[in-house]
Length: 213
Ligand code: 0O2
Image (cartoon, rainbow, N blue to C red; front, side):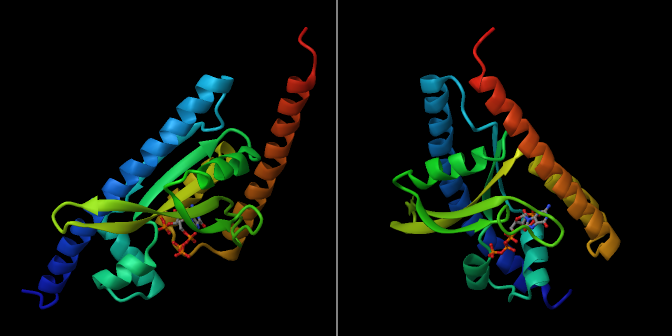
């Protein structure tokens, strides 16, 4: 038997305990966000939340990320350094709604905003654009009889930048080290989407300000 197998099995079991806490936190956060979406829709007839999805990272994906970032494969490092075990992705139709949604989320009383990463203001070299907010929520563990703070990553993106990220993720998965030429093409595709987003926002503003015919 491989000598490292028991270490791997132990980490997997500890991760499953942590992932159970993350699921509880994710349900809480998702319920608040869904409620926000429904209330806005009811009150003004249009909500900036186009879609809301969530996921818990698989153990295999966490192991890959630990290796990629050179983090020790042990549970405490994992809990402190991997902040997207529980993740929510919110997609908006228009790019400026990303900030509208972010402001609404930051005002939810039982969320503590830990930090915000704005990849729209500072896109990555490949052109990746998204707004990431890390929030902490408290969950109660009935077995340990104590509350725990869990971090959730909320990614907010326009539908166009979500499309870009999905395609880039799919291609990168097949080729994790793309050539500078491929990276440059992704960057120019991201620039084209920025132009697209500006155009559709102008169209929306024009339509909304014109008197009904
Ligand atoms: P997966 O497979 O999508 O889950 P941090 O602790 O926040 O400073 P981290 O987690 O590296 O460190 O932060 P970062 O760079 O904001 O990445 C978090 C997540 O954002 C990634 O999780 C991706 O989901 C997404 N992301 C970041 N950069 C890119 C990119 O260039 N392309 C795409 N498609 N998505 C990106 P994972 O675990 O890397 O990936």
